[in-house]
Length: 368
Image (cartoon, rainbow, N blue to C red):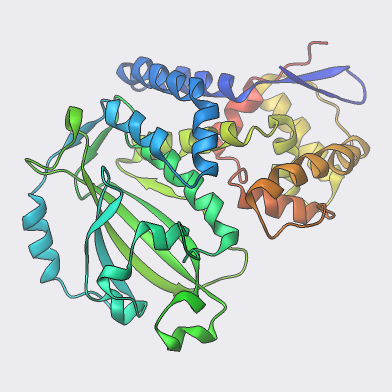
C-alpha cells in the first residue's frame, strides 16, 4: 500500500494497481461469476510478462500481446467468409473522407485496401502499410506526439479482445481510436495546408468459417478509416464497443492495464483527477476528503497546503520523467498544474473511469 501523509491523522494508505484489478474482478463476480476466474488467470499472465510487453512497445511492436491473444480462449461468433466480405465492400461506396482495409493479424499486413484511399490520402492501395503508419524504416505517417501512445494502446487492445470469457460478434463489436497524421507525408497536396489531420480507425474483428488461427482466434480485422481536421488537445485513447456491460468492463480493464504499464502512483492520480475538475487546491482537497468519507468511511483531512506541496514537489517531477518516455514534445520539466493534467491525459491516465475511481476510494484506509 502506498502512503500519503495528511495533516492530522498520520498516513492514508492507497491500493496498488494489481489490487485494483482484483477488486474489479470481485465486483464483476456479482454480475458474471463465470468470467472472473478466467479473466484473473489471463491478467496474471499479463502481469508476469510486463517487462517483455514494455520492451515490445518500445520496439514499435505488439508481438507479445499478439502471442497472448493467439493462446487465449475468448469466444468469437462467426460471420460470412472473407471473400464474401471483400466483395460486399467493393460494391459499397465509401463516403468522401473514408476508406476501408482488411488487416491480416498473423502476418501484420493489409490484405486489402479500398481504392478510395487515393481520394482521401492521395496514397495508392499498395503504399498503405503498417510500416508506413508507424515508421519502420521510414518517416511515420502518425505524428511523433501520438506514435508511442498508438502502439501502446494497440498492444492493450489485442489483450482485451482475447480475454477468456469475453464474447465478440464478428464484424459487429469494435474498437475505435483516433490519432493525428503528418500531412507532409501524403500525396494529396490539398491537405498540405494543414499541419496535421486526424485519422479515426474503427476496427472490427472478422471471423468466417475458415478465417481463423489456432484456437479459433480471428485472423483478420476489418477497419474503416475516416479523415477529419485535427482539434486542439487531441489524445489517443481507444473506446471498446460490445454489449454495454462487457464494454464497461473492457474500458475499465483497458484503463488499469495502461496504468500498470506506465506504473504511475494511484495517490497522485487521484489528486490530478480532481485538479482537472477544480481550479483551487482547497476544492481538490475537499473533494478527495468527501470521497474518502463516502466510499471508505475514512477521515482524510487533506488540506490545500498538502495538495499544493504534493503537486509541486512530487507529482510534477514524477510525471515529467514518465511523460518524457512517451511524449517527445516534452523537452523541459512540467511547470503548471494544468500542464501536468494535460500530460497525464495524453498518457491515458486521466480521466479515471468512474467505476475504477470508486473502487480506488473503497480501498483507501488510514492505518499508520
